[in-house]
Length: 530
Image 1 (cartoon, rainbow, N blue to C red):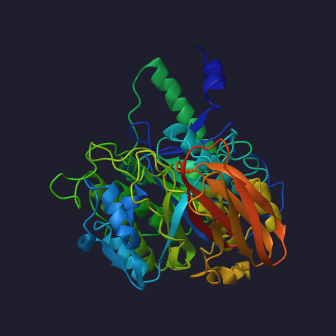
Image 2: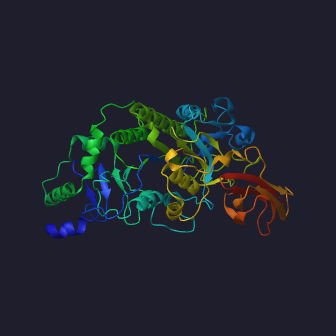
């Protein structure tokens, strides 16, 4: 093959930065070189804020991570072979209803220091129990019945840098827009034209990259062509020098667990943030959360596979937060954990849990609104193998809230990015973003805002709700966590209203009425008898 043909067929795919080892380290995913003449648009909204996305691959068991102490009897009854003993649950300051897995002492400390928000029962209106499809939904922020080729974070960066990759990097925007650590580029960071991130393939290879260690090119015709590709990539890819310069500014960091892969990823993130990169979004990940069997030790449920996973996440994030504090950049960073789904309420016979629906998320940082958002999931007294945790918060509300409250995205752009208008959840504090309109979240605490009568019911029941006015949503979900009916979705004047729910054609069992009014939401369980 002639060189011009080889380059023509292979070069447009991915450009590899110079100074790599074993074919890995940093890649910029492009359909064409992002380096062209000049910036062709107005400068993006200036911000020094950073969002770190922490993906827990496999579907994390949120019910053993954030434990509903107030419903401990039903929790124990549903999970006799994997339940955490009540006296081993980590307590949270000022909260006697909710606790953490005993392996998460780092997250417990962050919560007690006011640096952690726990968002209860985050999920998808119609959950998918497929790892691949559920992951696509979470990454793209799509409806379950639609397929999107762009990601929510990529669309955000696309609104800020609309001509990307044309004209980048440049004097105003010299740094990568997003950086992901991991071999496969995430759909979450896919923009309108191309993926908006650069990839660091592996922490150890990253340090070889900084030292200029290169993989030996074989003395073959293909090796010569590979060497030429690298030369072209090195001439056209300026981000490599920017990353090296940022990393070189940091010569001392805090300690991280040596055998913790997530911690090693986060250590790189902390170094680049301190080094001055204006990169807005970082993405890291860790796997192993598909715990169908042997989730716990048969003799001690506080240890085992899930304990190792959760303690690894907790220790990594705590080390990261301590490092950011020591480096003097903690005020700039908020992080978010997510997994493609949770697990079923009832454990299986293999000391594990099967694919489920909603699960808690952690939002961490010095500028989070700390505490537990939402209520502990209600657990049936006799949970079946099909029972799922009903979602309280749409996962897209979490994304939208962080974009608006942390990155100051205006309402018009926010709806363009998220494709719809979603409930705001009080997660972040950034004075530059101005008033968030979330102060009324306190209203509703301890109040019963949605009820139904009769309960139990045979065919129909009346649902009564009290709204403060504005957009109000009432949905009914089944025990699998699926929305089976939307009773209302419109703007109301303040007051008390009543709606009828006709369950004709639906099987007997537990149903949930979900009420949402602005930032306030509640979920009520209802029982249909045969």
